[in-house]
Length: 258
Length: 229
Image 1: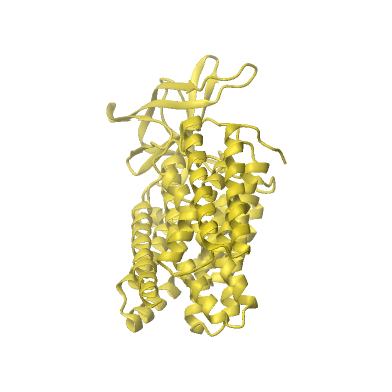
Image 2: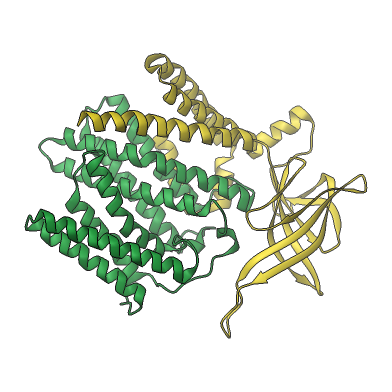
């Protein structure tokens, strides 16, 4: 764990502070200050991303530091989309999620700029990672709704939230998966390499397929088991994003993503 | 079926890519794939009848196309192609090529067996650009370019510069540079040669899958849900 004294680090800590202020305001039920602080955090996160782009001269999707940085910014947009369009209100969870995803960027991963390897200089690079980042945030939110559903007296309502959030995230997850496969075809002349990272991505995708199948077959009569699938999907995402990249157990072609 | 596939996917992550490829291409797994394929077709005919939804039909057609494409691109698929079409096409192999060398022989299965392409390949020139490196550190490759000629009937039939994410596609094969170096001052590259069989089916399936999923989940389920709430 390290504290960053760079401009990038300071911008991350300012975003986290704004999000913490929003969380505090939420807890004391001050609605206007909650949204003000959350929006302020989003603006600082946008400046932080812009600075990163300028500093590295490429889109900030290269490594886990940059992926978490983008997640900390995108959570605000997805929170608004869910509130306004899907009518799913999870503001406290969204703010907390913003702080959680910025923590590894602020304290764990190095912000040392890296040059882009030839294989990453592809038109598929940005859309592939962007689709996955957005999908992961939707699935994170779905798992939060699923956990709430497990302890709720009315799990059916929260099960519907979980379903709608997975409906929002799953096409993006599939798009990320498909773009990755097409990119692999052009980069390695093989659209499927049986690499551990690819297999974990397939496991994640299949877990959500199991969610849809189970929900369809049982006609949503077992919301607790639906919740189990949504939480399992999140576990698979965490393994795909972190364990498959960082662990020495899996020797992966995707090692540049660390 | 899905739970079994999840379990096998998790298992395969621990055994590494090479063993996972062998495992999923084994004769026993071929039986599993065929049963899965048949299940997909039966589910499709049942669901298409009951829901009459175009988007769901697209998702099922996508699954069938992807299954078919993966099979046709697999080792067993290539074995089937050799039996039916009497051709000499293999799934993948590697070729070592020195600058100015002309060759058509490439190695299969980690140099266990060699076979020939129906044309010759020549490495005209190899260029590698590096990023500016810090003192005492190895420079990182910025870009590489391999000028390749395809020679057929002693004439240049096709030329292309291979670079990252831009393979050469000719005569049913893709050629990418998997490694390069110098031996006795002569530059060489190792070309990864992969058959293009099944790519069209798989990518067609991918397009159907994405359109079907966005249509069904975003434009049907979510828009309806937004109006209802």
